[in-house]
Image (cartoon, rainbow over all chains, first blue to last red; front, side, top):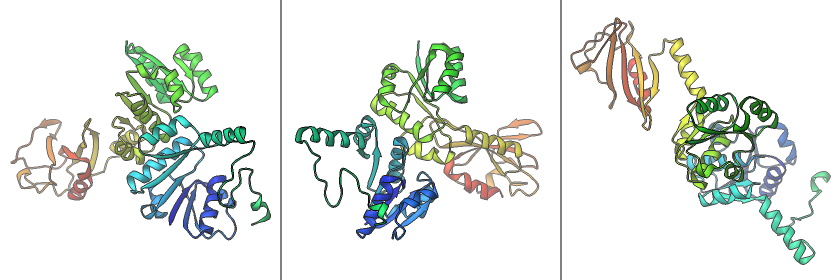
Length: 154
Length: 218
């Protein structure tokens, strides 16, 4: 699939590497060039420096042919604006905004914007921990307790 | 007394707040940054509240459910978008005005249902354009709730309008010349009006045709 990731922070960079390693075509956008240092040296995807709110940058990223867009910048409002911009201007059907605020996340979902909320996800995991005495297993190689692979250069 | 909530205590938010207070509004100015908040509240007193206006819980605490007017006046377009959308969809507010900092975002706001917008940057750009002059078509303003613009055209010695009769002109569709200023006198043109050098024409035109009109008169 063609996947666009906006924001090459911890989540954006890891997701970009993971998805391109499993064969997807990934473009990752960030305003700061240094953010791309988080990608692996052999990252097969396409890093693009620029603002995720700039339609010209999005056009260069091939936004209109994307199957999925993830808005993963540090700001809830920016992610909401990016997700709406891609849906409205570039007709991307699956445009997901990552949010910290559960209220905004729920309200924008009502408005037809796909949101995922880090707060409620963590809250759910912690509640499971209280009930079962351990965290649930995540699919694939993912782990609730982190992953130091990047340090070893894997 | 009508209640207005202004979000963002920059220059615009500050002056809008003062002007609404003078117009007998009950006003609340919300500012996120603590040091800006302190400065504002030393000046304006209890009218100022510290908080993040993008947070629906904070908006609720500010009494947004009874607000007659919400002004999203921060320097961050994404914040103004979210404030406007939350005010409308979460709290059912009808009268919302959003500040647009980057003129490129103006159309997106419109598409996303934010109809009342003010853009300081666009207004200044437009004014600078008028002052600098020389442009064949100068935007004077836009008519509220429509895509119609009021533009000014100056007939100079190279203009294809010079010596032309209005009735014979092949202007872009839906362009209406409403007034001609000639030697300080305004007149309403008819199809027999012939344009002279230094005439200033005032025309109404749909926004999307402005570039066509520009090409036409250059």
